[in-house]
Image (cartoon, rainbow, N blue to C red):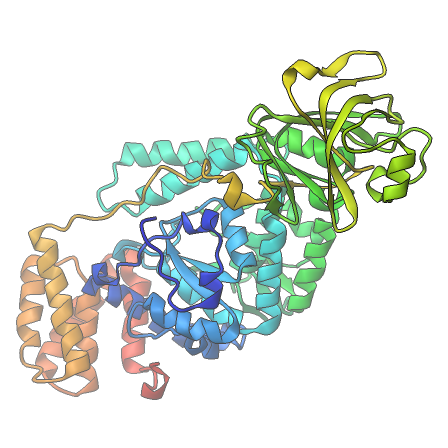
Length: 592
């Protein structure tokens, strides 16, 4: 990213570099008059319907999030509004990796796709767009309990283990969503992309922590209901931003279940309507369920179980010793004793050491470019863990800078050599660096040879946490999982540009005023060159009907729309809903 605009928002300004790589410019001027009309139609329909079935903070939350029914939101306006409730927003290019998405939430920053759905996907799009992200997510975060849940979920999700299959599925879904938003998408390519997503979903193997967390996220943040099973209210962004599914989800055909930890057993398909939804009695219950699952995750349980998840993930992970030392790298193997307690770990490839998520000086991945290995556990004959030794106890044990020593671990590991330095942080010994060092196991096999250089021995009697990603992400510079696939940006032909101009003329009349007579000319060009269009016709009829003018023209347009609704089933609901709002307009004081 060439430059970075924090919009004067403290949350956005605090984002670390590894998250800034996903941010793109909103390029507000690229939105067309048709785009603004799509936004306006969806928002008017949403307000009309959702004012009765959305969780009550949604409607006032629109203004608190800096949103207007009349136009696509400007990111600057949103950030000024969101800053008042301790949040921010950035625009990104479509789907971003789940781990990054979660971390944005932890920083209390909404991730908003810069693009907007095409008119032919006005009811729902599988691709993230500015309607879903801003009109779906932003208004509900004005609720304190909910935004606490959202940021807490992000902090937990950012530590979740993910697999290679997770990333392959993410790439397949991203590619499919991009194709579906392309107006000239090839049907064969679409079929291949859909088949690939289906194959990936069916061949995920044992679901990772991230896959299971994503289910909880889906059934709450995206498709959640709150209240009672009989009369639930919508708070999930996927429903709030879908004028089709927000209606269908309330029918008896969609099963309503209480939200508890059992929701984790329900996978989801983003390309289809959901067969069941989950109802929570309160947002506090969401946190309770999240805590239940978090208690099973590697970052909380550590030990052999956590290390196994790290090995299986084949991604950069961080192992946290009881001393607080953090070892980041690809965990290749670990050894356990008869009690299943780890006593030796090994990473391969670039690795780094850190404390409190800050890299230790001189211990970056350039220095530890070939990996890192170290024992875990207590010294033989010492009940007290080595990390807690006082200066006097170190002297008694012969652990003195510049002198030779032999450290015998309960596991049988022996470390012998000359101590170069002892690293201590917050009264915990974390690292002992040796020269002329041998490390051997109880069979006498060499695990480290002096010819290999300086040996850095991690200190800690147990592994208390294991999580995905590096401890100091900015120093480690993890960019490998940023997708190389960009979203599609339409190149408009002369005919489409003419249609944009017609929409703009109608838009100008609504906001600037003036004579209505020219709308007849707009209608004539629409009928001649753009007979398939219905939304511009609807907007013209709205202006004519509200001002009780040009009734012959209004009757002609109404007849055209009614005929189109009757003969084109896919447009029937869209047009009829639009006609309903012309008869039952939103009060002017509510058009914020």
